[in-house]
Picture 1 (tube, rainbow, N blue to C red):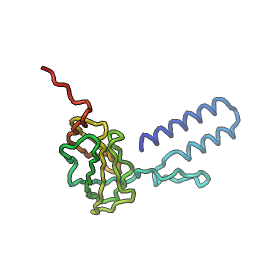
Picture 2: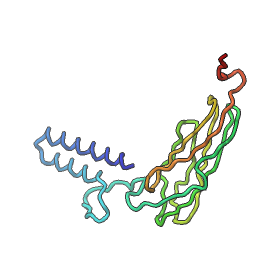
Picture 3: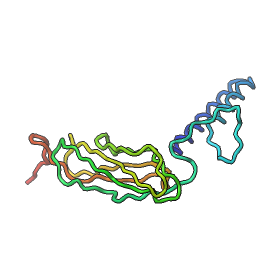
Picture 4: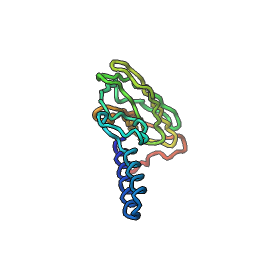
Length: 178
């Protein structure tokens, strides 16, 4: 999220610079400055211009961070046949003193899909992330990673699904060399 904000600010600065170089019109430069002010994230204690539309609240709060602890970070699903679906639920607890907000959870590929809570999690409260792995067209040893982004330090945590997928009959089995 921080990279997104930085990118947005850089684009706005470049746009304002281009506009100010191309026009001697002070109204255009003032409009560009207001646009930059509207897109810049300011500290909470800094006075805000009431005439400038404020940006939407970022998905990951720029304020206090907290911590989360998983009961387990790796689940070994063992051996499955190609095409089977694997699902596992990871329990976690907000072990910090601030509200926990998960802003994203992404699998390492399209075959690994996490479902995570969108509502804030109070300090001391627990919640679940369910991960589904579709083994269709996947063969051999697997180590599927899910990246969770939250208002924690560091902002990303990882959970894993591991196991082995047996190729379907007629599928490409590993070649045996002699």
